[in-house]
Length: 401
Image (tube, rainbow, N blue to C red):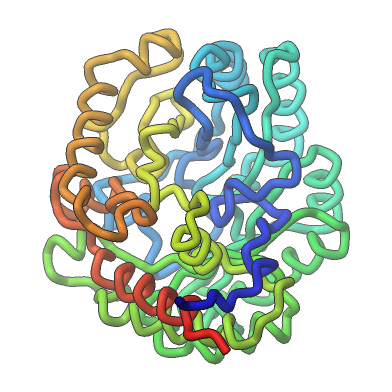
């Protein structure tokens, strides 16, 4: 019989929000079955951004998007979304992630008005948990104070120490962004705003897990996660510039896991590793790409067009409807929505006999679609994900003393 040597405090959910940890908000609690949706993404400025990151998939030549709009989503669309979503909720609350582009470009008054419109539309029927993914460069004292008062939980994007971050995450004019991004992150911490960090792993930093780990320790970053870079349009042409091979993702993940696991500090939480352990101990995983989150999510662009996820906004054939032309129930029961959901579900069946399927969920449906044009293609990170799961298994199921 083997003994499990794992500090269960390493599995505690962090108290921050954003794309990097949607199920860890301090107000998030278990819900009762009532409908379908648990999470909504809204891109208030579409793909408009004050930065030009080398690997960004939004509105660049690396995606089917040909242009970036400069519009802000009207409040009429916001009201209609929150007024009509209630019957479709899986429970009595809805997680909303303001995404982009850079969502802070919508301005402070926009978010003040959003909260008031939400209150008017919700009418006490359910709870809204507002989150955000931001590059952090626009955050000052006023923004930090506003996000705290409005109870919007942001996650900041940064790619490690300055020499790694600034070589790929730059302003539109090419200037480095590290100082501004970290200033914003520190202001959030100073003002007791629940926040975390999301690190994109690319050819720029994949060989430096030790440097990234040391940066986490030096900056006292308690909650973060990492996201492997993939460039769908370039991948299909065999021309990736910053994207990673399965072997590279596996090596980085395993090296970083060992650094984190050996450190043994329960106050440093990495979502990917937390879920990899929880899943093998019979717990519930929270990462959307580990459970085909597209089946329980919906995303809206500035025109009110509905998609299964924000990353589908560049793929107009996946548009499920428009909230200004149809009711929410009509969108969710439309033939296009059924086509999307049936395709995702069929793709999941190909992995049903894999030993890791209860944890992995067959991989991210969007990446399958973006890389292969359908949901039944292979998952690009299958090999690296399995390598991590095997390694985690070996580390936590060890011979007892």
